[in-house]
Each structure stands twice: as C-alpha cells, then as structure tokens.
Amino acid sequence: MSPAIVVHDASGTRRFGEADLPLRIGTGPAAAIRLPGPVADQSHALIGLLEGRPFLQPTGAQVTVNELPLTGTRWLGDGDEIGIGSARIRCAFGTDALEFRLRFSGVDYDTLPPDEAVPELAGPATEASAPVAPVRALKRRASPRWRAPAIWAALLMLAVCAFWLLTSRAVLIVADPPVAVLDVQGVPDLRFAGRYLLRPGSYAVTATAEGYAPGNISIEVTDAPSQDFSLRLERLPGQLVVSTTPAVSAEVTIDGVSAGRTPTRAIEVKAGSHKLRVAAPRYQAYETELAVEGGGVLQAIEARLVPDWAEVTVNTVPEGAAILVDGAPAGTTPAKLELLAGERTLSFEKDGFKT
Image (tube, rainbow, N blue to C red; front, top):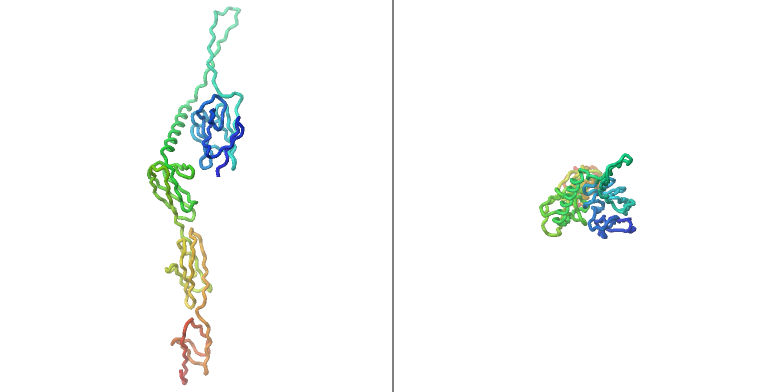
C-alpha cells in the first residue's frame, strides 16, 4: 500500500492519493502545491511516485534541491528542500505519509526591476555646485553558463520519456514462484500498476529465486495495448539421506532405480512425489510414498525394518540328529533356528535311525 501524500500550503492541509499523481507545482488553479505569483497554467515541476519512491521532475522553471540546481529528474528523500523562486517546499517522509510543506519569503514572487536610466545634467557644474555622481544602471544578473545546456538536457530527457511512454505497451510478466526477481534485459525497470512499459519488439526476460534454477524466456511485444506473459522456474533438487533401524546393509531404490545401500550419502532427488523402497535380506521390504521438498533441502529418512523370520526351537530323541531345512543342512539337534517366513520343510537324519 502506497503512503498517503499530504500537502501543507496557503490553502491549508490536503491529502492526495496515488490516483492524483503526478502532483503539479505551480501558480495555476490545477496546481496541487500552489505557489504565490501571477496565475499561469504551466507547471514549474512535477512530483511523482515510482514503486512507492517519490521523485521530482522539472518542467521548465529554475528548480533547486537543497540549494543545488536541478537539471533532470531526481529522487526525493526525507529532509530535502525544493526551491522555486522565493518559495521553499520542505519534504518530510515517513512510513505512512509523504509530507510537503510550503513556505516563502515576504515577496509574493520574484521579478527583476527595470534598468534605471542615467539622468541628464542640466548644465555645466559651477565651482559652487556639488559634484554630481552618475547613477549606474542596475544590471541584470547574467545567467550562469550551465543554464542553457541544463535546460536543453532536461528538455531532451522529457522528450525521450514522453516518446517512450507514448509508444510503450503495458506488459504483464507473471513468474512462478511469485517471489522470483525478473529482469528485462536492455531496458530500464519502468513499471506502472505492476506492468512493464515496453515498446514493441523482442526482449529476453530472466528470473531468479532462492531454491529454484534460473529461468529465461524470449517475449515478443506487439502493438496490442495490453499483453501477458508467464515464466515458471524449476525447483532445484532436494538431498535425501536414508538409514535403517536396525542398522543393516539394505538396497535403496527410488522410483525403481537403485540409489545405493544404507546408510547412504546425500542423494540428489528432484522435487515432488517419489516411491522409496528399502530391502535387506531376512527383513520385510520397506516401501513408502515420499514427498521431496527440493530447493537443496536435506531430508533424512529412517526405514524401520521388520524381521521376516521367526525363531524356532528344534529337538529330537535321541539328540544329535542332523537338521535339514528345505533340504539344506541347518545344524544338529537340539537347536534354535531362525526360519524365514513361509512354508518350510524340516527333516532330520541320524545314523541308525529312520529319517
């Protein structure tokens, strides 16, 4: 939200909004800051806002800021003093309001007196006559040498600005994410109501945002009065570290692609949803749908593995019989066996006894 604009002058205190910009400084009835002097429709200077920051633009009169001549458009700051003739406009800027306070000296406006003629002497002076000193004509103050070039420079700048504004089109460039910083290469960052002011032609637009890869597009601005473009940035990959409980060596796959064994180092994974699978011998596979934040964020995943076996106590009479599990030797009785889940065939062998 733009700050309020408050003017204190001979007409009292008045408030203006962004819709009233630019504020005119002059002696005419349309001036927002009314100076003393003969009424004239032409403004001496304009006050505007660009992205919430006030600036001053002279329009023909001799204007100073802090007693220094103004040759072109200038940013205004808190405490600056604008001078036009004998009038002074004090700037007081806060977070909520931009105040302009007018004051001027005893004269209503500045004029220069006409040249005074040297009076003619009536006759030759006599010895008794007092000497008559010639009266010097009051000379007009010569204009400084820089004034003419400065005026031409200001007029040229105004002409360039006017040409740019009259031939530009309002272009809206929307970035995803909205916090991205946009840069239209080769032109000044001039915006009005959130839209860029661009002349018809081709432009390269770049966008950067923390946690995203830089992006760029080429746009073609036509003669249409209003045009929209969009630019979407790709989220940077995230970092994934996978471990298991209990700590065993397990194979990690992401979306069916092997990503190493636990405990893993940081694995680079694109932002978004992925299928994670952690598998180790004699344990049930750990599977989950994983949301990767991306943007370089490190995420640690601990896979809790469930044993895929059970402990079985085996004994025979007499003892000392060989144990076979699914035909494979597994020790002698008595014994405690860790058997994998599922159906298993146990058999026992001992010399002198039937199987």
